[in-house]
Length: 338
Image 1 (cartoon, rainbow, N blue to C red):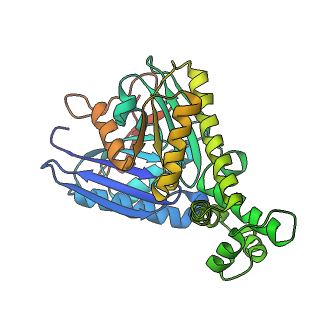
Image 2 (image 1 turned 90 degrees about the horizontal axis):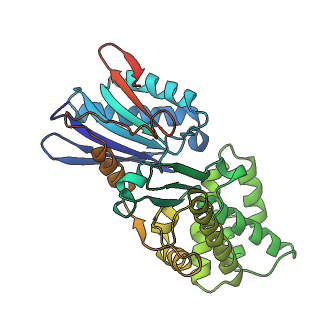
């Protein structure tokens, strides 16, 4: 496996980013839409993932590669369908690869410098939200990650949903007056009440709700009191998730936290408020903001490569939080490495 290309795929709820590092050191990046079936539909998600894998195969010259696919659509409790889907699309793409498969948060526990040595907690605040932590002994604990009906508190979906509901309540007199009414109606070209109906009747409401989060953040920064209450509530939810994981792991005071996600990069003031709250009210130590998750995923891959260039998963991760898969384009088969 020496001298082969390496790649990382960061597949979030709204976007997919790929980083390919060739044997000669050249690095190529690709951006694509989501590969998450619950966000864009199974057919569109499959088409995107197939095209991403075809691009990787092309950059590798259709030779063998090693990689890490970190996807928001991976649930450690029920991922058989996702692994079958991946096997089918890798075959379609003609890709020969030894591949680590996990959710999109796990590799950050190993690829973010602040967490790599002694552990800590990752908080994700993008389209959805989630929390994952690791202690010094390697035990991994998570919270959230149950899609937007069961979790995703503090995420773009949650911020957008709270903002939309506040605008509707203000419109019919049940809630306080807020500039969100005008912002949302201008954004959508229709009243907030009609926007709410449209999103509810649409096939994939997550992306539409997440798209409203920037309006809420802009209103907060403009001094809107209702938007400020929403932002405060969402930051409190994110801190609660960090504390829950830290308590479950028994992490010592001052443990490290990594923050990542589109809400944080899209609204730096939100990221700053979250960091201040984590430090001031929750006793967190280092807070490292991850601006390029795909770079950290590639770093995590490098940490687990054996001298011969093959990835080796630690026993506490293998077949519990991550899977090692091997695909041979010529044999048209896929196997799980035990």
